[in-house]
Length: 174
Image (cartoon, rainbow, N blue to C red; front, side, top):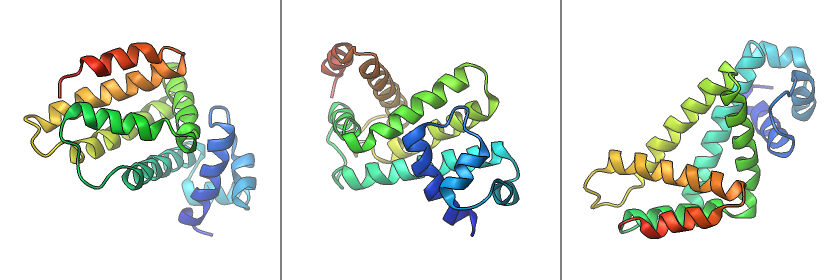
């Protein structure tokens, strides 16, 4: 077994069960190996978590790429609306439950989750910059604005205040 063959099974496990507090044994069992082999391939628990979160961020980006139209939206508002529509699908909800686990652990001071979450946000920001409208006057700044709006919308939806997110989207200029 290699790192690349272990990651999909471990990713499926954490998407179903969460990642905070997870130990190597359940991850190893899900991957059909031993916790010693995970240490061999990843160095330690933090190495497993880092690799797993990177794998999941790449998987999430690939799902977004396949679910969104191939041509960029004509404006920022449409870009956000498309992403929010796709990310509200039942298939992507496990990613968001996991994301909020990671954010909570990072906010509680867990350095492994904080650095992985920061790297994930950087990767998503890069993805968003590449998917900004072709005529956007400031793709880098716009991507940062949209990422903030998307993350805020997801959080507001998670706590039952989608109405606030919808009002913000309605106020966003094209």
